[in-house]
Image (cartoon, rainbow, N blue to C red):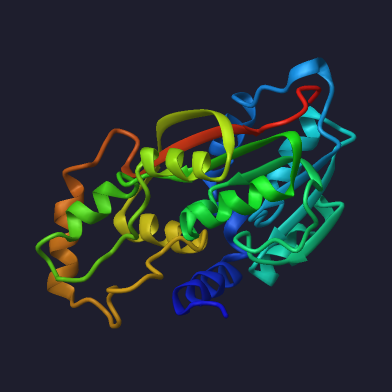
Length: 263
């Protein structure tokens, strides 16, 4: 049974499906970096790829630019996202990446960009290892704890509510990969940021990608004007020449399932 938190995450992404592609500035950049750092031995291409948490299909587009003949199966638990992605995928299915509806050894590459942070990482990687063939690879990006640090700092002291979700440290991700039996783990931590003219635009952009506060402990009602002005003033200290930053503490990760080396 789906948890209450996951239901809120799914509903947030369903609502964001129409606005996601326009707002996903950092997400596009991270997909590009994930593919840039993905090594593939032998000069060939993966035959079957699973895009786990495919969203609107941007990952499939990136993968096909590198490997035009690749077959991409997309899964996402937000049906509205899958509807937007339908023309970009060879097949698609509404499913949870913690419980994949595929046979063992079905895929050459398990790819996931900025989806794992909404899930239980050990469960995700256990399923990834199961559906990969021997010698298959995982390539993923996720978020680390300093994501939206400016948001947390600006709201601190204004109210007792939590305004960002907790994210795993890189070592927790490494342990989850190794516990799943994946080897050759390579992790790359990077900071990415998008800039906005004002705080309302910044927070709207986060909502438009479905990444606003959906966990426990968030504010249930509207913030008063005086409190909002204090938050705006606090956020101004982060202003750069390009505008107000929304920072993403990004982890790129790669690993391999033991077995054949002829990938």
